[in-house]
Length: 140
Image (cartoon, rainbow, N blue to C red):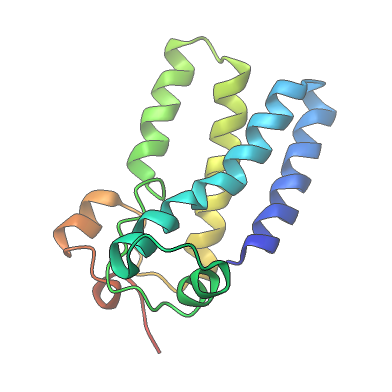
């Protein structure tokens, strides 16, 4: 999905959370995590193209799948599982709850709309596939 779509949907989910929790902490952490999970694309871009900040090229490369390797360290069901354990241990801390909701909605939407293999958002599966874009996503 594109950044604009993630921002819009994260804002919607976060606003909904605020209406049921009346917590700005949950609202903020959900909004931030729902969008900033995509920061891991920057690492993949830098590893493929070097550390050069060209915003237009960055978005073109990411949206048109022109990166040979997709490490996507934050796009991981395993990381969501660890966050859920943290939420339990920390007795449902509002920062963690919001982060989990934002994180979950982001990965679920990417799982639906990004044409991945059904296991693409498992980090260790991508590792087994050598993070190869061709092996992790259905490329037309």
